[in-house]
Amino acid sequence: MNIHCANCGPELAAWAAGELEPGLRDAVAAHLADCPACRRELERELVLRSTLAGLPSTACPAVVVDRIQGVITREQSVGHRRRRLAAGGALAAAALAGALLLRPGAGDDARVPVALLESGSAVSAPATATPLPSPVDPAAHAAAVAAAGYTPEQVAAARRDLIRTVALAAAVLDRTGRQTISDVFSERVPAAVAGSLRPLDDPTRGG
Amino acid sequence: MRHAVFNELLATHRDRVYSRALYSLRDARDAEDVTQEAFLRLWRQGGEVPADRVGPWLAHVTRNLCIDQGRRRAAARRHLGVADPDALDSLPDHAAGAEEPLRHLDLDDRQRQLLEALQTLTAETRDVMLMHYYEGRKLADIAASLGKSLSAVKVQVHRARHALRLVLEDAETTARRKGLA
Image (cartoon, rainbow over all chains, first blue to last red; front, side, top):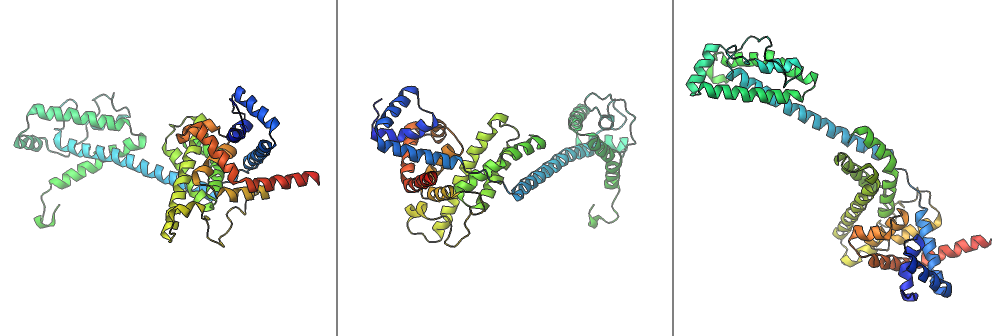
């Protein structure tokens, strides 16, 4: 490449940075040796390079770090709460549905959700845990199923789906989560179901 | 990404990111906002940025955030009644009498003058200059990241140097005098 003043200037930054391929680098060097104007331009390039390269790294203020950590902590907290609420909500809903749908004591896995939650090994838990007292009268449950028009096969399929869902959800919980859900099954759900089945003293008050 | 890993990256890169934003924007509060946003974006990547690419990734994000911040500032100035939008880039970023944003920094006269002079360049050209001379990025890399040809970036740097020549010649003369003294 033939280097002259007009095309030497744009190459000087690359030349000073050592980014030119050998042929072009030599051509620029040869031109610089003969051209005082381009040598002055090179001096300006070197001043520019050393000045900007020498800019100090300025300490990031501590308040910025605090703000970053604060946002992350809040996001983690919100994310954690959401995950717990999602898991807890799904399990509580499943628990309530299970309490209403499953006929306690009638099937070999009627109490499996509780067994799974209490065992700590949800998916592989045996279905032989001691059944808890049922909040629903078996006869009333059978009557409700019949009145709703469900077949025994539909009830069995719904029970299997429910057990699988609860088992999968329980598998992602830690010990505290499982204990919380177990408490919901054993205490709050029975109380809520029993309360909801009690005839209202005053129908206008709601329930 | 684990919090401990993120904290290490934050400690390693925060000064560089903040400095880059400060030299580009010349406004401490804007630089703080850019730094915060850059690291929050890194956190939200959740470890998808390879460890050896975090530095370039942050530089890229910081550059884009600085451009966005510059645009917001330009829009704000436009709303303040600047008639000629083409004149925006030549306007000072701070109102007369405002606190000199770099006065707390440990800069020599030449650095201070050159940073002032950089503000007379367009935002993109200023960015190219900082990427190449301050961050040490190769011209070819800069061209690739901007979607330009290498020749175009070389010419851009050449023209910028020409625009800064008075400051550079002054600095050169001063240095020569000090050398003779």
